[in-house]
Length: 414
Ligand code: LLP
Image (tube, rainbow, N blue to C red; front, top):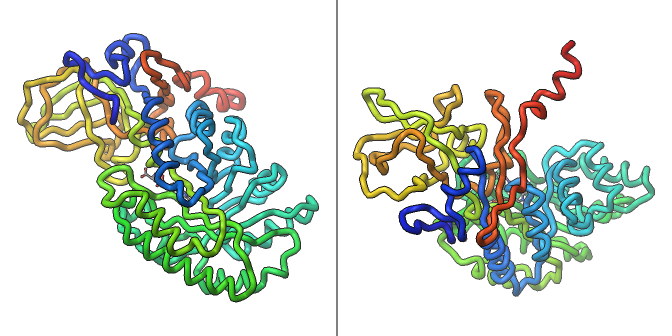
């Protein structure tokens, strides 16, 4: 993370010592750097500026209202996948005219909510979903803009659990079926079918799958044009990896312009991870250290309920002690959480700085799909979230209380 450095052997985020933060806030908690977030969103706009796109930040990566307000003040709309995310985007001041509603299983209630609130575009994921949108819009005497999410059958060469663009995946509509839907466009009276969308996966590190997708889209757009249909929008989804990415986003933007520029549609991007991942860390305390005979276990007070990515995707998140240590313990070590699951494990290493019980560690790159995927498993309250702005620490989500956790069950238990 930029702006996370050791100063006199103590880790600082922007201008605040993390040790200092731990004196006021019980661990585990998330900490975000405002400066990194602003740089990430500004860099993204700069990289794609030749396309003059609509940038709809993907709420599923991190939907904290303060972060959404910050990002939207830099010009982002929202990509949402549920009524909850739609409401949170609006709560954060994002206008429905800047909201794209994606998602493979939208209910009638969710579609009704989106249409009633004048959603900019609903991305359709099945033939029957169009009929439902048509019916609901008709009941409200409205016309809803929709795009067809294509399944281009392109392997994005990322982790299989975050691959979404092949025909083995549940997402999108096969190209031949999508073409037929466009041929039938005039059958629909209450939907305005004027866009296409793709999203081939997440954390994608190579340009090739994107280039392949662009070629497929170009071919599809040509077919549509020969039907006399002009597209208003081409939504290219998200998926760009912030780490070890082998290409520059500007290259992707240039290729997009070259392949699809001639269709004069408004481009949409739905970036998530690339905006927030490296803006966040999870701060945690070592509860216990023990030796199993085979290895050393460092047991933290943060678990897979706080950050599930290592358990779910074998994701590797670097871990640093907040006090820089020159002594290295050269013993195979597994850094784990307190949850009663062997998969509640963050990192396995052959050596780790010499740390003790009670010391604090930070888990890096936790700003995307960290807090947003956290749960109450083992009845553990959701962690607090803090935003660091230079030398200021602002609580942007309070730690959940046990009262809040039990409330909905207490009402009916006696
Ligand atoms: N648009 C759509 C339709 C999506 O499904 C997603 C992510 C995005 C945009 C944003 O993708 P991004 O730019 O963040 O890669 N929980 C997993 C990631 C799941 C991504 C799901 N869809 C993880 O922690 O790696």
